Image (cartoon, rainbow, N blue to C red):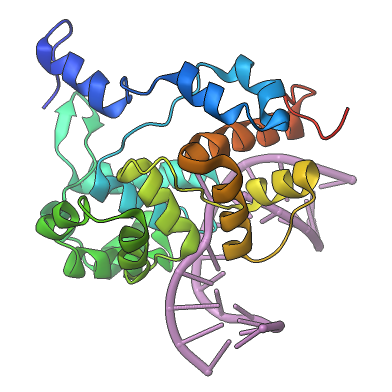
Length: 233
DNA sequence: TTCCAGGGGAACG
DNA sequence: CGTTCCCATGGA
């Protein structure tokens, strides 16, 4: 259901899904204890972490494994178009778990999911709405380890789902761009665990925002000369 | 612990 | 064109 403009419902959507409650000034102020982050963060004041629906987030990040953004978009559009409610002319919502459960593995394969089809199929069978609801009350550590037990969910996906789906701002997903950033700016490399623990120690409860600033900056820097943070100098 | 399938397109030279 | 890389996981 869509929220009509100017209504209380729309304000609620903005409040929840655009995380209107996040005080960016406070968050940036806390993160600016890190001198490197402090230098470039200000120009990224408009950057927000969104609060995604837990189910949509889980499936989306499982689909995102070893795919680039255009392809991820295509896969999500394909399953939404085929299994999700039409919420406006030609616009489809992400399918609920019961809706997506209608799909057979081969149907999903034909929609271009590749080997990810079996993970999505298994997620439909093993994760119900009540389970996701129950997980909302877990600590980050417990949430993380429960997510890790799900098919198609490893370290990186578990942290993305914790951050974007369950709104745990202390989560710090490490992908190839973050690895590059940590090496370039902090001379850090190592296992997933080591990098995550380094970040959590350094950035604390807003590590997720730090991750977004580093991620955005690193991608921008690889394209133009728009890199906001640089190492030393 | 390390290796590689699986999968398809985009970006690169 | 052919290569390499991409918001990795799982199983050997």
